[in-house]
Length: 345
Image 1: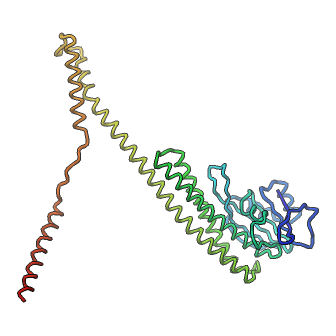
Image 2 (image 1 turned 180 degrees about the horizontal axis):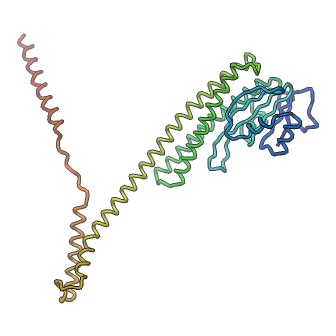
Image 3 (image 1 turned 120 degrees about the vertical axis):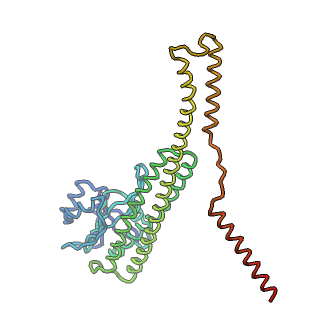
């Protein structure tokens, strides 16, 4: 869907195509674009199809390049969709700068564009397109930091749930958060290269205030990169820890099952022995034989269970400990001898 925005009294106002003032700069906002939107962008605004396909590619990295009629800037912005399995991810946004209009193209909706169209960003002006781009990138960094804090809070909540009971659902949620952090890492590093290119490029003209905003955006972007790396390491360690817990629990269960099978093996052998079709003791004694065999099975089961029961092993002092004690005694003797010599002096 394509919407048109112009600035009136310092605020962005949505307008229809027929209501656009030709003397004022216009922002053409294309979100969740359809085939008809692509046709309009190609035919009416002469945007190259190759550039549109690059912008709509979910894996496209950040860059800036110059065309005959416009300047193209592609950046990565954070997106939050609660209904998806991976709620936090990133998407490319294309910013096409003409002389009197600026076009943004994104294949999805996001919080950054919503903040801009709802006039929640201070100092946003359509009279200065380079400043418009820098403030959009700065807002994207702010959203990155906000989403990173939310990911950290969500991972802490999942950790508390896992401490009570380890379930597959919570582990899958942790893996999805880990994927989100990987997406953030790649996008933030790509944006960092874009910001460095913007400080050196001559394709866009920045004044002193714009360069200050650009430096602040670089600082926020570096902070977001460091936070992403930290949270990724913490989350990876958390997943490994819970994987170790699951493995230990499995080993304990297998140990118990093995112990039970060994205990049941002895009475099974006894009952099988007395069930053979050959002359055996107590075969003509009626219920007495049954009682004796049952008592024998119970007695052997008790004995085997006692033998297989874990007993704490008394630790014997190692040879190394004894050697250290001998050395300590020798040092004590030498110290006493030296003290006696000092007293005589």
